[in-house]
Length: 326
View (cartoon, rainbow, N blue to C red):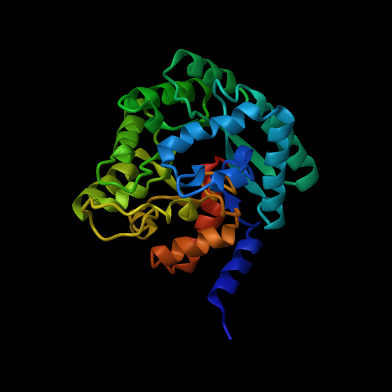
């Protein structure tokens, strides 16, 4: 009997294994019993609140604590056959450089002992416009492989946030990965802003959008034009389906859709899509275990997308491409 998922898994292994193109290893396995306290515990808080709630973990974590969390995540990935991965690492006034130093140490360990290519991106949970936050962002630039961004945290000044990232990209020659459109809402148009800003800065083909959940909440006519714009910008995407399948129901009207990056439309539009695990056992995703097979299966089922060759590319080749390793 022929098992298509077993065949796909075999093909992925034959291409060197999964590429995890987006994660947050410095917070892996940081969820605690107290976070499950009650219906109003940390794990049930809104995304924007969680951006601040993680400060408690960050403040109490030494460089060695961070190292142990990152190492545990890397071993988890290694045991799945992942050989290339990227993690955003907190670089801000709370974590200062403790998480980044730990990640650099873990990167060396992974290369030597796990035979893994572990890339680091800066996570800017305090934005890049505040003077103190900008200091830690700029301090991290020479040490990271990829420039990370989160324009939503500088609410109302998302364009200025992107300008800071892209100026750094021009000066360093490094790729940029940006969290966008995470609320599954037609009110969000961050992907459009990102694509237009890429073209403005002449960084076509150098930028990757992470998540893009709200895209599917827009009308078909808007989506069609957005894909054309993204193609012109050379904007690639990373889907992390487990991270967003739990998107909360609202009374906002929008097209019927799943809260997952719409790869069934993106790929025919000529866009590159890779795969990530996002959070592992933290207050964002307490039960997520970083299993890339789970991520791939959820992605294909949520999008009713069964093109085996393209799924193989999503899991492997496209990941290398968005990490600049192709």
